Amino acid sequence: MVIAAIVVFAVAAAMGAVLASLLSRRRRVALGVGLTHGLVGLSAMVLLCLRVFGGPKVILYNDALLLFALVLVAGLFMLAIRLGRQSPPLLVVWVHGMTAVAALSLLLMGYLRT
Image (cartoon, rainbow, N blue to C red; front, side, top):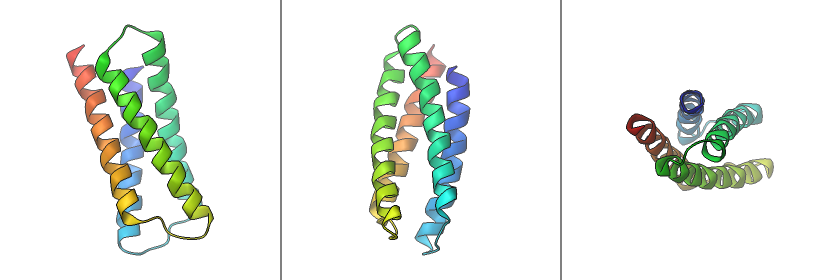
């Protein structure tokens, strides 16, 4: 279950890197692309929740889940801005991405320790 979550989170991270790159170049991205990124990340979060709430306790998995929850809140904030027909601030985009990278790193460290 954790391996699947790591792979799906990595796919979401790659999609997010492309989106952040396009946004930093001031290019508009179709809303569907961002929604797809969000749905992939959300599905990975469901996989991680199944592991955290259904298996033995691994503190790093719990920490990663907490950070991914914060990433989700930032993503919803950016979606709200985007639905208002504006581009999200680059600072929010970068904080969202760097927090996701930190959470994925914690998840990988937890997997490698078990």
